[in-house]
Length: 220
View 1: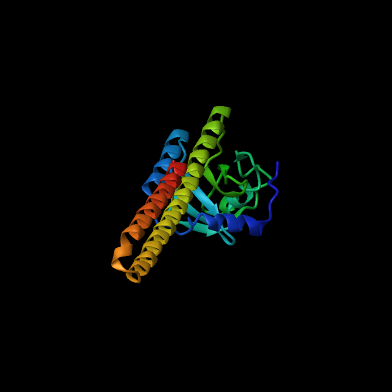
View 2 (view 1 turned 135 degrees about the vertical axis):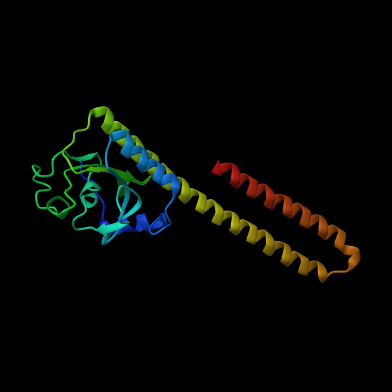
């Protein structure tokens, strides 16, 4: 079943995750290395499909970090909600003229599962590649889907962590601003009246701290 989306909206969703051009990460590389070993494949990648390039967050068995979208099979794979498999690229009409197939790269087998966001957009793939024809059993296909799910969970988790950090910074800045404003107010009133004002500060501080703690609990 084809994914119903507008490309501009999909790109906006991709950019929301702030993952493009981030440094290489050992946790991602462990996933692709595990996939390559489990499926006995020379290449495994986690790709993100941008406007004019396919960028690899992890690229086991490849020396490059990105390729153009024109020859990239990942561009086609994200159009499906299910696993996309090419068992023999020289016999598959979808790939007969693909540059990755007819060039020295010699791609013959390709299997990819779309990385689907929580709101239903396919932003990339988890793919395995070989230079010879291959076949995946149903169990292997399910395993590849699970690996793609883990990769997408990691992307969502990191987005959530960034949002939480920003919200906490906003709360802390609000607290700091409130205390500064209150301190200035206290400086303007007689000393004999300041004790009651200090109690107000304490109450306000407890309320803000309680709000921050509630926010933290909701993020767990």
